[in-house]
Length: 188
View (cartoon, rainbow, N blue to C red):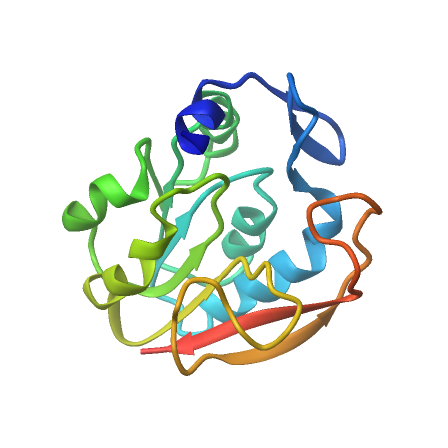
């Protein structure tokens, strides 16, 4: 499966991206900075408790930490990214790391004021929409990586609003052909 292949793959951490060694496929790239900043600003609007699913390069996590929040739970399952996360978390007393797949732990997680979902090769992404009612407090703000280049999403999350964010994706990356990212905004 894509997920087991990804989890067993060796990654390379470049200054501007993470790639899978044997294919060169990009997992995350630094051109996402502006949309990560906007996503973090949205999910932290209510302060409180934030759930971040997927750590990647830690760009969004850094932005989430820059806002006034009570707690920050990060769910990550790739062993090499977990190593980076263990280093990143030093000195951040409000961060809890959950080192499993989010779909395996949703029943044991709390409820949150903000949720940001951005995973790679996640074959259970279709379960995210139905899991949200159990993960969100009233008025929670939720956003997620949107691979669509319009006001729609692949996660079947209805009634989202979209904020257009100017981006400059690297050519031949996983998100090309648009200089606008449509950030989904869903309030519960």
